[in-house]
Length: 355
Ligand code: DAH
Image (tube, rainbow, N blue to C red):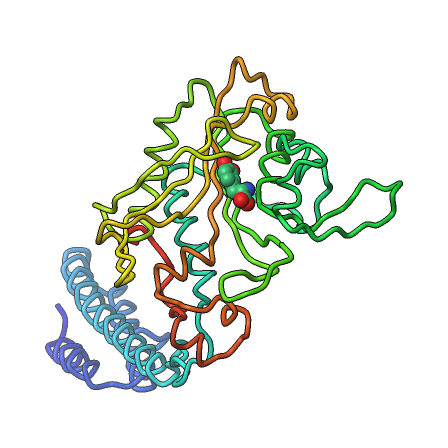
């Protein structure tokens, strides 16, 4: 039999663990479970007992041993957890940087327009392409079915870069259309791309700048029709001007690289400038079915493939959308203008916003 003293000792010690710190706990462990601890001594005393008594006492010692061992383990875990919590809260750092109180810059309205166009056409499955500002004469004109001495070349007030008669003439691209050529030479249909980018013409007034921006669009595939062109551009214009009922009109026109060709107009009120209201029409972009000669120039069989293309001036649609009167201020880098017309870098264009 075990002495009551030992039982009391264990029960008291178990109570003590609740209060012990790490050192006190270690002292308790040594006092009970160490080489000459109370439990160890009790176990040693079993040797002198007769088998029956040893069995009973052994079981009881083991129960008490488990009791004290578990109490020590539980207390140690609680102490460790408390120590970790204290350390975590002592070492806590704020990794978020507060926003600067006064943002200096903003997203330029033109960049914003490009983001919006990318979001709208991106949702229709278009990829974005770009091409160089300096083009050769063939990509900019000839391949687009604009032969030498064609009046369209004079119309575009081209900047020529290379006066050397032996070299292939280089130009600052007068439109984004040469990227149609570059793409069709390198890719097989189906093709579905937009090309936002810089363009250049010798022209300067309140609505023209020698450097400006366009966005080209090109779709080539089997069985592409005027219906696809119309649906695509109506959807684009209604999304961009944020008006699902925006009136859109297609008017017969002429471009050398499309047949038939169409100007696209939107409804507006000439007096108030309100887009979508009134009974007046405003020309917004050029478009048409890609001319068979252009397809053939790029090695695409016009009997098998058809397509449509369009080109839109980005300054113009940006000015209309945001009521900006003078084009020249777009390029003056005046931060006051940018603060007024610019957009927060924290609100990128997205279709969820319902552009
Ligand atoms: N490249 C023309 C321009 O700068 C715009 C244009 C019209 C592009 C019709 C097209 C198109 O792709 O089909 O005036």
